Structures are given as C-alpha cells and as structure tokens.
Length: 177
Image (tube, rainbow, N blue to C red; front, top):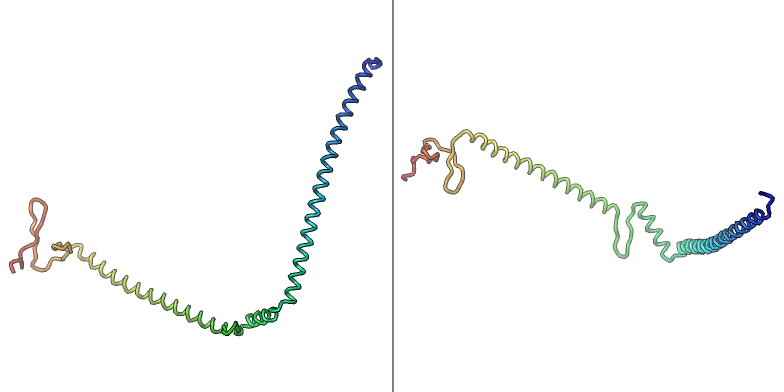
C-alpha cells in the first residue's frame, strides 16, 4: 500500500495543504508581531518624551529656586522660624514667644474652667443627693397631695381618714380657720 501511486499523491496533497495552512498562520503571527513592535516603539517614544519633559521641569524648578527674587527673604523667614525669633511680616511682627505665652494662657484658662465645672457639678450633685435622701426617708411617712399636686408630709396632729371606696381624705385640724 505504501508503494501505490495513489497513496503517494494523497500524502503530497495532504502535506501541501498542511504547509499552506502553516504558512498562513506564520504570516498572521508576523503581522501581529509587527503591530506589537510598532505600538511598543510608539509607547517608548511617548515615555521618552515624558521623561525629557520631567527632567526639564526639574531643571527649571532648581534654576528658579536659585534665581528667585524672593529667595533671600524666604530663607531669612525660614531661618528666623527655625531659630524661634520674631518674624517681620509686612508691617507687623509675630513673635513666637508671644504666641507660646498666649497658648499657655489659653490652656491655663481652659484648665481652670474645667476645674470650676467639676466643683459646681460636685456641689449640685451633693444637693441632689440630700434631696434624694430626704425623699427616701419620707417614703415611710404618710403624705398629703395638695390642690396643686405637690406632696406635703403630714404634720403632727394631722390625720387621714380612709373610706370604703379606697380613697382617703385629710383630717380637719385647721381647715375651719
């Protein structure tokens, strides 16, 4: 079977079609690689351009810092601030020592305000405790509710009368006056 002419022609046809298919795939791969190479070249060119611009900006910034007309004044203000001296700004003078003293006064005043608030809270809570303790002590004693709704403890000589309907009324000790 391997010696037959038909089989040889069959194999040549198959190999030719296989080689044609492989060549087409190689051409497609080369086409895509060319596109990738072109895009890479463009991207690298953009990156190189941006790097050059960044270097120029750095150089300009350094040159400006060295040639700035206000550079000496800025350096003097910086040195004065670092040393803690007063800094002349226009026609006013801001003293860092004065600022520190002012902040100390503010913090002392705040501390005193907190202490006074604590003392007032303690005093008012003691009064509230005394009132509460008195109310607790009065729980065991009979009381009368007056017309305004206030609770009034019974005085010596007062009495309560209970009626069958469950209500009670105060005695008539001084009600005739």
